[in-house]
Image 1 (tube, rainbow, N blue to C red):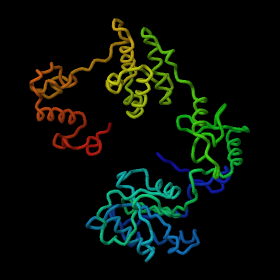
Image 2: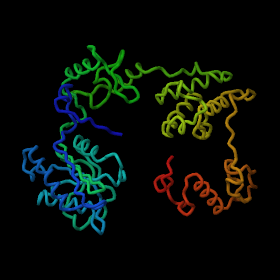
Image 3: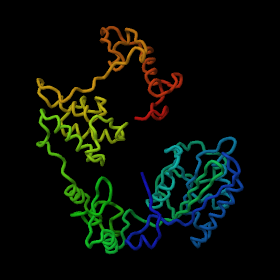
Image 4: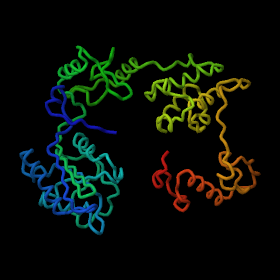
Length: 434
């Protein structure tokens, strides 16, 4: 995720830093023309006003800065009935005249789809200007003949000082932001003494140091390091060799609380201590208070710990307790801390010892819930049917197996069977998330 702070130039200078970019002009309009369609003339008039404001800010002829202009478009193609792309190009031609051929046109929707309530395009404008590179327009293989004379981003290095971001929305809404490049490199500290004074004022004490805690930049209560020692590119001083990342990592590791040592792990016969270890691990990795982590609560449904974070924690559990790959919480489909503790205990105990607590049994679906399974598909795991494996010679019928799996997905997702195409990707095509 990316977020940008909009502030006055003087505020950035006061802490001894260089801003990423400058907002030259921003404007919004709504012609109230149509619920879904755009009115070409009103958009062309609106864009002309924005370009005139940019002329005034840059104090340059438009034909001059057009050579170093990146235009971030809203739409990526022109439907037969006309659309945003056609309207945008018409407005660009009217606004730039013959200089329109010098403007570099980019777009990201071929990579991201159409976001709602968020913008990737402004990120690309700001960081693209800083790094002087933008990605190619995805899948641009058949350029509209009406656009043949235009410059489209092919990926790689660019030469741009100005970026124009155009956005359109339902109800004939349109918006534009014009950015000017300010940051010339990743390092953005220009006055280390001013930055140190800024930190001292924020901490209300002289000599304040920084630390990174779970990817969050913090003022250290004790210890810490100077900005240039953290290994963060933006906090390096311009013109100086960056501090060694290895030294930064060592400093951060010294500040971080030590992970529970393997030698201090709970003994096989101490279930309470094992559950406490796991609670502490989940608390450390999620930011929860240990008291908030109830061992019988579902990790995602009750605690909001998503599958990505769970996967990260499961790797730590596997490493800490030496679980085999086939017996990790992820492979076992476990969803509570209590169940994970039972799994860990089962693999750490002597064979004769009793388990920590019985792992929740996977109950077979009742006949009313599951489709009847012919003998040829009795090899489906017990989560579908508690049947014995068939003889080795009796191979399952692919057609019947497919029907069973489709029915299972339909039952759990709400899809109609007819909508579940076997070749569709579960997430990309059907939207069934991980």
